[in-house]
Length: 336
Image (cartoon, rainbow, N blue to C red):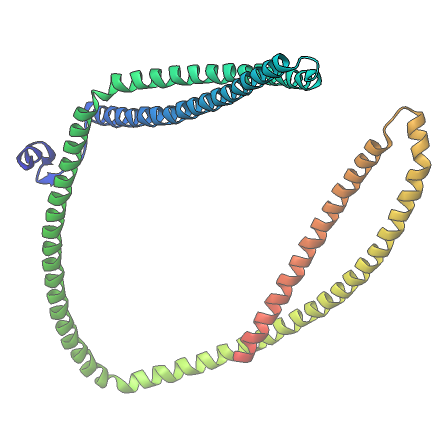
């Protein structure tokens, strides 16, 4: 098998798991056939359980019928014996027994009807079981060959996986050698850089005075820039502090507005109730449905309220963002 895999699956030194269209179609059909056979086996098992239940039900009903018939026969014999012994003296008792016999005969008819129904169920269950068994036997002959082919395909997959693992191990060894070579090159480059650094250090000593002068000039320019930045930062802080004060006033006004809206909403609800009580008779007189009209009105008010809530939420988010920016500026100013 391994030789066959080497001859068919190795291309250019690489193990390939690629399958041609015909090979892939064959594998899919084989697995579908195995799945179908398994389903047929499950179907036979399930229908066998159904048949057993139907047979048990028929047997149970037949037992009920036999018990009733036995009772009828015994009671009829008892009535005949009593009648023969003393026709007039046992007349009432004989009539009672015969009434019970009639009742049992009616019950036997019911049991026979139910037995007939269970018999039909058993007949259909047996027919379905036999059909499923015939279908299974028709396809079950192919199962051994399909299992053998599937096992061969799985063995081929294992061989391909082992060959790939071997190739990956070799590739890992080559990669490790390459990494070590690069590390050696890096060490040599580092030594060369150290030499150049020492050379540059010697040159730097020569121009140390000029370097100190340039550093001093750079420090002075940086101090001037920091002074300008501090002035600009203080100006920005004052502007944002004013904006934060305005934000607080807006938030207070919004809270007052919400309280006023709640009171107005309560008044509006009361007014709507009064208005609907007055409108109900008019809508009914016009042949309309007052509840449908009110639902439409509620829906329109709800849409309007949602739009107002959306705008309020956007305004609140803008205020929160502004407040966050002010807090971050304050923290940054404290750090500086």
